[in-house]
Length: 131
Image (cartoon, rainbow, N blue to C red; front, side, top):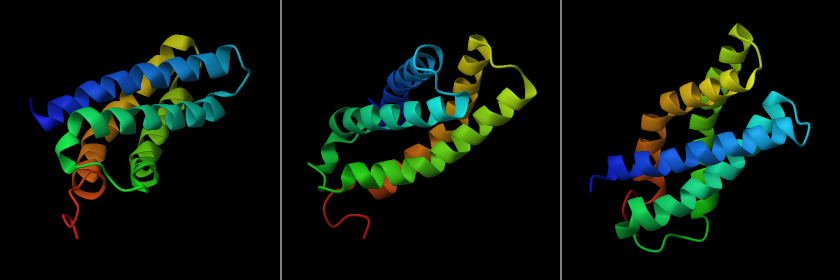
C-alpha cells in the first residue's frame, strides 16, 4: 500500500480524534475554540505519530527516543497552518458545531501534504538516512 495513502488513512483517524477532542473540550470542558483546538491538535498529533510509526513508516526502523518530539515540532508547523485556516474560517462564520467541524476539515486538508513530506524526510527515517 502506498505510503501517502497510509498517511491519509492515519490522518483520517487523526481527524476524528482531533474533532472529537475539540468537541469535548469546547462543549463539555468549557475551553474556548482556540484553546480547545490547541489541546485537540496535541492529542491528535500524538495519536498520528504512534500510528504512522507502526503503520505508514514501519520500514524506517524503531526510531530514536526523540522521534515523537521531532514529529510534534515539525507537524506543529503544519499545525500552525492548520490552526490559522481553522481560525480564519471561524472569523468568517460562527462557532456552531458544524463550523468547528468544517474548520478542522479545511485546516487538516491544507496541512496534509506538508506534514507528509516533513514526516517522510525528517522524522521517520532509517538510521543514517536523511543526514
